[in-house]
Image (cartoon, rainbow, N blue to C red; front, top):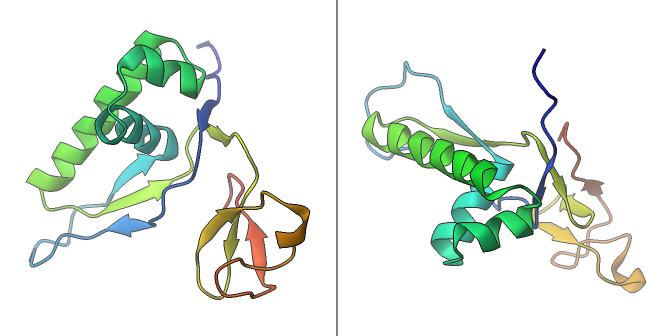
Length: 136
């Protein structure tokens, strides 16, 4: 029986639900599921320009585990680009370092740094907000 996977820390959820290729006539292949921890690995390594040791410390995993997550994410991105497949973000095996929420009205994602902001969206002021949890 394999060991259970430890949760990987994600600083913030992706700001997208997915990407679709433009102009592709092929729609028969299933979308690529990019897990939140894979998104975080790409963000830390390629966008924030951190080395793998620094990124692994932020995510709370070992450097070899980070390397495996990062490699898998890059393989998925390459597959999506080469085969013109849709990419969707999926929660995966992650947890947030803070509570994150999504507005039902404007769909923005945010965390609530102060008591004053709680109860409404900081962007559109809507009171229709949901906490982002693994099932969302």
